[in-house]
Amino acid sequence: MLRVNNFQGHSLNLSEVMRIASEIEAKYGRTRIQTGDVLLTIVGSVGQVAVVPKELDGWNIARAIAMIRPNKPELSRWLSLVLRSPQAQYQLGVAANTTVQTTINLKDLRELRVPMPDDGEREAIAHILGMLDDKIELNRSRNQTLEAMTRALFKDWFVDFGPVRAKMEGRKPYLPNDIWQLFSDRIDDEGKPEGWEMQPLSELLTIIGGGTPKTSVDEYWGGEIPWFSVVDTPSASDVFVVATEKNITAQGLAGSSARLVPKGATIISARGTVGNLAIAGCEMTFNQSCYGLRGTGSAGDYFVYLTAQQMVDQLKSMAHGSVFSTITRQTFETIRRPFPPPAVLTAFERLMTGWFDAILSSVEESRSLAQLHDTLLPKLISGELRIADAKKFMERTRYQAASQTGKMS
Image (cartoon, rainbow, N blue to C red; front, side, top):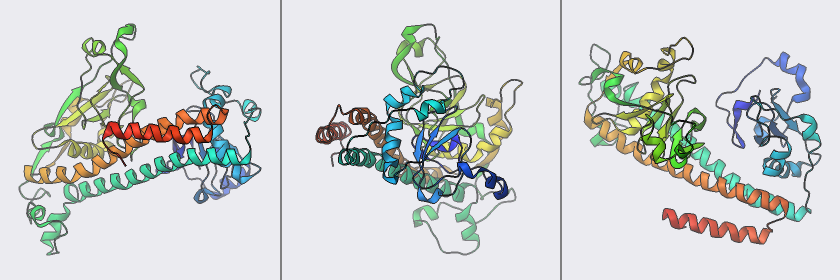
């Protein structure tokens, strides 16, 4: 059963799916979805749109999602584009509604007027915008694979001690020889590789507190410094946060306890919604409900992130507080883990850097593509921009973006 939390922008993330008994699902045949149905979130995080792919045919949806079944299958992509447009979102109250629990009224949805250019124009618009969507989805899928690879290697080296156990069992090396030689061939009496030290998690980290500028001082807000809060948490596959919902000024930074962290630092939510993780994709700061984590000594940024990711459930289980669950600095002191020699950490960070750089590059590209999509969408649907002009606009915009990043193709 799909829920609102399965929507990720305008695609579906199936990493956490609710499952119900078939005899219960059978009572809700009316909301059973088919390939090509258009789904719209109507309660809470409203206005998110997705088209049902073939592999989800026969699934069901929660009450906070509306299902729209086009009379003609070829209209699916067009309807999804229309629903994503600012004009439709405003008509449905997404932009205008300021209540705590935003809700899209189904009566308004039924009465929504849908622009219908001729078939050729409609298909051309859907094709142009669809190419951008497809590239964004390809980047997301690629990042998902790369992120899984980073977790797998971390687990093998630092949780399962794979190279050490392979040596003990006389198996052939599966790492380059220079790296293979860095691992011992014995597990000591504490259950860790010989030569590794047990240390509190706090010894591996520099923990940095956050802060919030005074909301009453206008000069503190709307600047160029990204200010991270839990709403900015990226998807598990994208890992990096490169833009935030709110920015602050240099005055705001100086007038609060907020501190800058460099690109690569890990940010973890420590109060309320505990355990959300992100890597800073650029220099930024964050609110007082978060900590910034940096490695000490030879512990690099990506080792720190993956360590926090691997231990986040333990950190969350130890959170406490009378009003909000909270991770404190003492929580990091309580958890102990084996700490490898510097040479192992250096080799690991060198391998990770290439993979995480590729993830960040895809995140940045997808953000640029999404901005281009959002610029073109209302202009094309309203007829303000014609197809030929849109193609020229795309070429000019992509040329400018490539020139700025030095990635001409």
